[in-house]
Image (cartoon, rainbow, N blue to C red; front, side, top):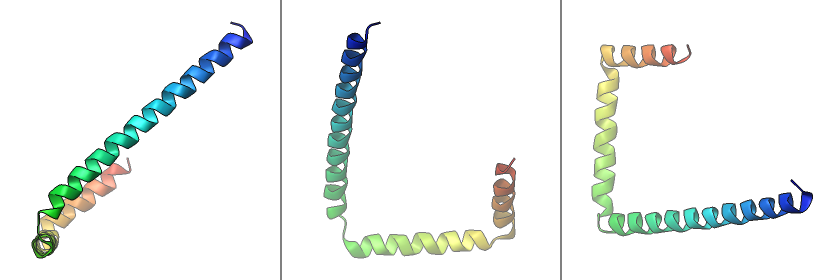
Length: 80
């Protein structure tokens, strides 16, 4: 393979990578816009209430002896 062909191939790969990057950014922007539209329909007090309730429930579940032991066991097994 000649150096000229290699340079053309590198330029083509660079062009393709840039095209993929722009497409990914465009898709990410569309998804972000959709999420913002959906979240805009939900009132803020409802979101805060759900977050508080979820935190309260998770705290109660964490305080159960078996739950915390299982999670600690899973974390310790993850090191192996």
